[in-house]
Amino acid sequence: MTGRHARRSRVPFVVVVAVLLVALVGAAIGASLARDPEPAAASAGAASAPTPSARPEAAGEPGPGGASGVGAVPSPTATPSPQVPKRTIVIHGTGDVSLDPSYIPALRANGYGWAWSGLEGLFREDDLTVINHECPTTDIVAPIPKTFSFRCDPAALDEAREAGVEVASLANNHGFDHGPEGLLDSIRNLERAGIVPLGAGASAQEADAPRYVEVKGWRIGLIGVGEVIDPDHQVADGDEPGTAVGHDFPRALRAIREAEANADLVIVVIHWGVELDTQPRAYQVAEAHRMVAAGADVIFGHHSHRLQPMEVIDGKPVFYGLGNFVWPSFSVAGSTTAVARVTVRPNGSIRGRLLPAYIVSDGHPVLR
Image 1 (cartoon, rainbow, N blue to C red):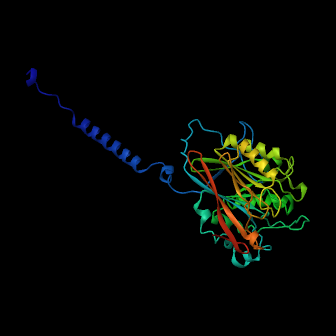
Image 2 (cartoon, one colour; image 1 turned 30 degrees about the horizontal axis):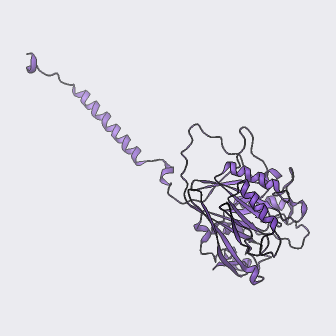
Image 3 (cartoon, helix red, strand yellow; image 1 turned 30 degrees about the vertical axis):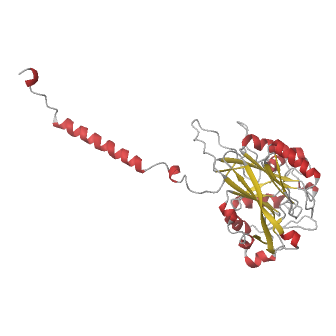
């Protein structure tokens, strides 16, 4: 027969079965992929500590060597990952922290958690905490002859990290109290505890170099500056280890400009001024303006052992003196302190304020 009454050709049964099998296998593969997304996506919403990253180097050049162990940033891949959108971040800064049980026997009696137990978890709840670490944390005993020579216990660092401390500056007049080997050992011990050491290194280049952390879409550059020195030879010079900058202020400005070129936000941690001053000296105000002009977004200052005011320069908070923090309670003036709190919005606006605190007993600051 022909036309619409013609007999239709039949598809062989084997072909039908083969087509069905292919369809079933494809459906199974699709379901498996849907149930197994990339591991990064599964943890994208989980809170995490700031991620430290190495100092960026020019293409083809190795990173600085030395005791800190900071290496070069890996070369970018051909298909970089998408940029993480910036979110609001909260940063805290403190004044002088001593974890020397010989200077503060209460730490030995009560445990090192005593130093942080009056803060109601403040540093664990923020995004970044920066302290002035006013002593080398080392088991090396090689004290420099001076009136006060401090040595902190490396065992105290785990408690500090657990309390939420992420960055510790050694750029002060006690970081070198046990000589170059004690300083380099302190850098190693901080890194072992997961705390970023700042303002010291195996050479001038390493001591001055910005350190970087990444948190909530922000790349933050940090610079340690130690203008108060004792002894004079504690400042890193050439390939000699030591603390950052010293009295060569242009070194600080160069480091700030480098950080500004490689980060979204720049924090300067500076040891400066005169002991017992309750107001900054004119030279400090002038230097603060120069640092902000060079690219500093936040300045945490200390050394005077007294709480000093905060000033805003071109929208950037400058904390001239954050006083004592984990320190003996010698007097009302010396025990009156604060935590610097900085809030940075995704649009780049920065707000700073002081959270009042008081050292109610030796080594035990409490929020007021």
